[in-house]
Amino acid sequence: MFKGIPASPGVVIGEAFIINHKIGEIEKQELPSAKINEEIMLLREAVEKTKMEIFAIREKVIFEIGNAEADIFNAYIFLLEDPLFVGKAEEIVKKEKVNSAYALSVIAAQYAEIYNRISDSYLKERGRDIAGLVDKILRNLSANMDSKEQAGQNEKYIIISHDLSPADTADLDKKKVMGFVTEVGGATSHTAIVARSLEIPAVVGVRDITDNVKSGDIIIVDGEKGIVVVNPNPKVMLAYKEERRQYLIKMRMLKRLKSLDAVTLDKHKVVLNANIEFPEEVGIVNEHNVEGVGLFRTEFIYLNRMNLPSEEEQFAAYKTVAEKMNPKPATIRTLDIGGDKFLPYFKIPTEQNPFLGLRSIRLSLTNMNIFKLQLRAILRASAYGNLRIMFPMITIAEEIDEAKKILEEVKAELRSKKVPFDEEIKIGIMIEVPSAAIMSDDMSKKVDFMSIGSNDLVQYTLAVDRTNEAVSSIYDPLNPAVLRLIKMVVESAHRNGIPVSVCGEMAGEAHAAFILIGMGVDELSMSAVSVLNVKRVIRAINFKDALTVAEHCLKLNRASEIKAFVLGQLNDVMYVKK
Ligand code: PEP
Ligand code: MG
Image 1 (tube, rainbow, N blue to C red):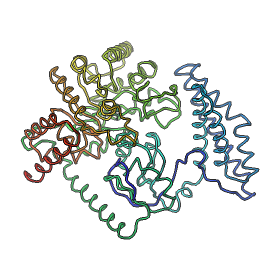
Image 2 (image 1 turned 120 degrees about the vertical axis):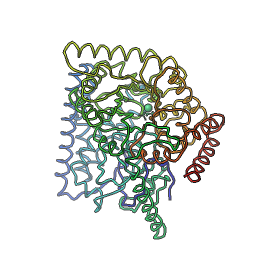
Image 3 (image 1 turned 135 degrees about the horizontal axis):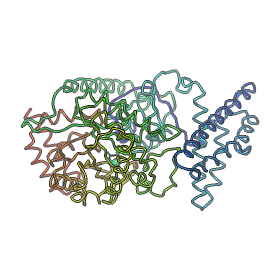
Image 4 (image 1 turned 30 degrees about the vertical axis):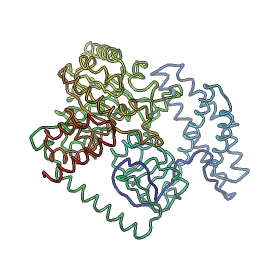
């Protein structure tokens, strides 16, 4: 039994499938002589496919960003054609009669070693590029093989991996992947967030799990408690089958709340919104009868592809959301890339501290073409419904001024071309950095609404990486410093007559939602999977109790005390008054 961090709820039992071996760990398979030519053909096909993909990206980058930025792709193509690179891998396949993926990994490891010894940071970064390139070839290589063969006999399986990027997670096939377990990660990493959106049970931060599981082992993933069981004995298996049954019963009970309103017993209404990553999610969101989309993480349109999505593609995605939600509002957050989300076709220099670097609005403000293209697409889509624009990771007021100025330029351009858009479109900012929370009084005078991104606010307030399992014990949204900052933002917003929402993961946790409501937060926005549970709590509490609870919590000095207190209170109101 292994303990990790609960990342996405649900209990699943199935066969393990190990993926994402680190380079150097790819299994060596001996091949019969008759298979060697076929293996080399497969490798050549994968390299050719990778080359075509890189050509396409290069063309797109030249067209949309410029010649200089496309240079790096020439280097990739050069490397793919270099006899010392792929040619050497072919040689290993022929001489040693082994699989091409293994041969490629041997060459990649040799390159990695050379680049690792170099102290120049630019060249070091090129070393990482090569690793990325090898990864692409390996993916194309494995895409050519029968996926059934890889996943054993089972149609469905549980992925066990050292890591899964948010992009990898977004690409999972829900019909086949029952759940996943990773060795690294945190509960509010984007990998975990996407798992919740896709409703795939997951546990992250399970140390050394890849060394303790083989493909084909039977695995239990308990995404609620963060537990993974490998090859359970019949007693444990039975207990978990029962657990799974209970979980499904609970979900069925919650479904009854779908058509009911989110109002407290003393008739205080809480606006419940949903967070989405993909336009297709609006269907599920509408089923939950929410008031709107509080956060559309648009960067997921940009991930898992080889080029920048065009204005038309983006327009189509935002228009779908606008139309399907209409007349309810949908909040479109502009691109939030960097940190733990990267675009293969848009390289930013490797950073020592990506979460503190060129991330989010900072990246948009330094890449005007990309930013304007997105704003044009959102504005055009605003003619088809009730869209709001939200700028992420605001740190200083100048960023709001700059972003609004650019938005006005784009609006003027559309007006001059007589392209329709919503002239009254509301503009908001995310409060995710302590400086913004502290300066929220000034900032709220510049915008129509504010939304607290608690996932990042916790990370930046406590100086704790949200994706790092080693420091996850400090990462706590109930930390008194975080709660006091939230309170400050709520007061600033209300003093200036604008609404404030919380759209980080804490909004979807029943006990945290109880405190947020009591602190005066107007709207809560969360993964669709959490909506009904939070609604259940809202319908069972009195707003006046929430006010008293929040007031008391704000006087406490430790997260543990706050948690114990609020859980006790919630227990009382849920089970005594109801
Ligand atoms: C947040 O930081 O709380 C947030 C909602 O944005 P994201 O999780 O996408 O960083
Ligand atoms: Mg954020």
